[in-house]
Length: 394
Image (cartoon, helix red, strand yellow):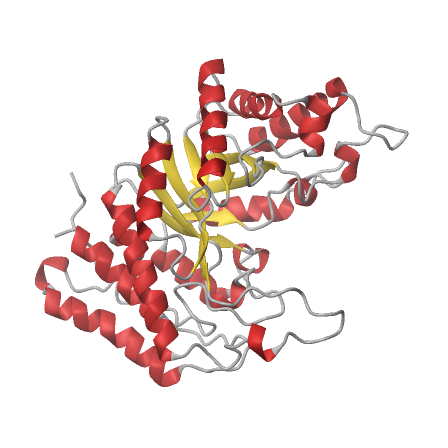
């Protein structure tokens, strides 16, 4: 059974008509257009994050919807973002705080303070806390893979380091973190296994061993495989399906597969998204959209050191034109219609960042990939997603 629709305003839901709801949606967008500040630096003004409706109250029963937090946010210093996240979402992910390099920079030293605050942030607000990630070829210190002579460590040594790290980290947050991205980005674009130091040192079964170690450390935690381009590249999706099938045949727990969702405007096509979810769900695990954003900038190489990006590669320095705002809104709306079609196949949608100014996609340019702008005002994309979600609850 679906939950009754709830509003974040004090007016009881039963007394709010759909016309009133539409007006509530329109008001923040109108205010945003009237007050939007165009230059790049973020301007945090208390109260601007307030919304008439909250996405967490609109999603289907059983869904989680959330955002990835940076440390400034999980530490509570970015108070406007804290208010927005608390109002809008029921789950959080960490951008970097739980990655190997951040938590375990030296063999005998862990750095848990910031990660502890992140976990407390979510638990204090009754949110589902996600762990990202345990095993990745990036943001992993060299000592993990190196032998004393600087060559690649042997299988036994690397397995012991992997097990110790996972047992320590997952064990520390046992019962506090709902689920873990156990292995992240293990595939090449053609669906073969990436030739990472993990694979070279341990073998192809490093993935299964990581999932095994995570389950031993917290038997109740959900365990996920996470990767990008699973929707846009069928051969890579097939590789993910092979990983899932291998784990299942070994009797190793896996609960869901994460499509990161680093998409571009109109790519993937909604038909491709529909088909990919169907194929991934056929494995028997749930599907997650784990790092959702929509890149609006043209493809461009990095400028020479010390040089600014070219105007052609950075067209939205002064803000996003209305036609692009509407195009982004349409694409988000179309994507969420597909996700709602698969409401029983999906259990979480997480945006990778709270607002445009927080997004990793800026990288020296000015991108606008999320539902809130740099002033933490809702964009037309927010309004469209909210309308699509509300329609699904009728």
